[in-house]
Every structure is written in C-alpha cells, then in structure tokens.
Length: 108
Image (tube, rainbow, N blue to C red; front, side):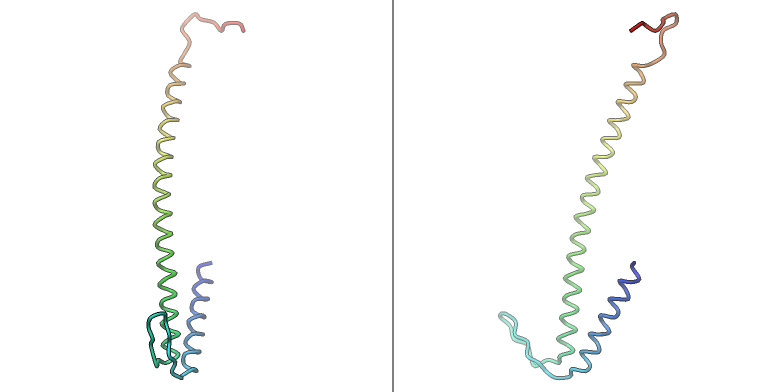
C-alpha cells in the first residue's frame, strides 16, 4: 500500500513540474495583507505544493503525538488491570487451596 502512495505523490509532483515548466508567465499573488509579484507561475505552484506538504506533515506529526500519548495511557491501564487480575488469581488460588486431610466434600 505504501508503494502506491509513493507512486501517487511522485506523479503529483511530476504533474506540478510539467505545469510549472509549460506556464512560464509571471503572476502577482495577492495574499490578505501581502502582495508578491511578479513571480513565475512555476515558483508559485512549487511554493504552494511545498507549503501544502509542510502543513499536512505538521498535522500528521501532531496526530502521531496524540496517538502515542493515548497508547501510553492505555498501556498503563492495561498493566494496572493485569496486576489486579494476577492479585485476584493469587487470592483465589489461596482460598481454593488443598482440602484438609480427612475432610470430605459436604453434601449440597
């Protein structure tokens, strides 16, 4: 599955390269409080792709951190529950220990 993602990303960047090379004109980019230009269309497309990838990576990193924190909490809970289960098994084993000699099973 990973190879498919790599191929798609590679094809995406090839398409961006082709579009940038064939569109050699200059453009002016108007941001909210900032105006950039004239700049080549290829540079604008490349900058947009780079910022998009950087944003997606930052979102992925933040999500990964959240997952690691949740996994750590769940591991602690699992360890605590396993310790409680072991303690209960030990307590039950001590209560059901071998019957004293000469004692028979009581009728119900």
